[in-house]
Length: 85
Image 1: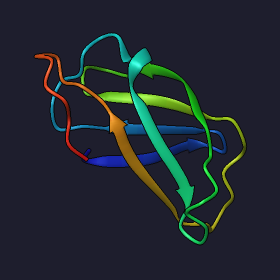
Image 2 (image 1 turned 90 degrees about the vertical axis):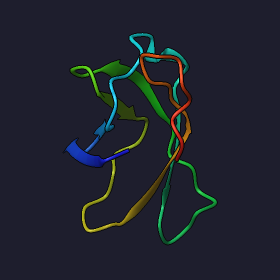
Image 3 (image 1 turned 135 degrees about the vertical axis):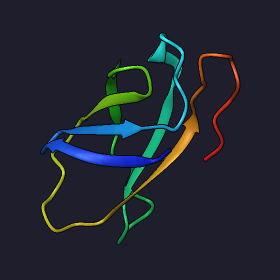
Image 4 (image 1 turned 180 degrees about the vertical axis):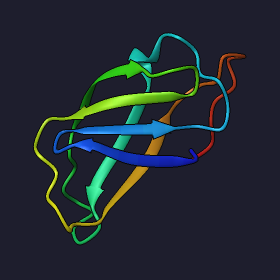
């Protein structure tokens, strides 16, 4: 994972250093507020953006001026290699 950017209050763009497989439906991420790592914010509606990025929709709006942690639970490059967090 090389960069995470906020597109809007409910959308993140997660970029990787390698090209990803086209079927991102099995990808999994864990997003939590930095202040409370027990509160998971569900990410869904994953879609490939270019060859090396995923756009994910948060099921609740992200809050301005709040820091978040994101963990790659599962992602795979186009060669089928699991991407390390």
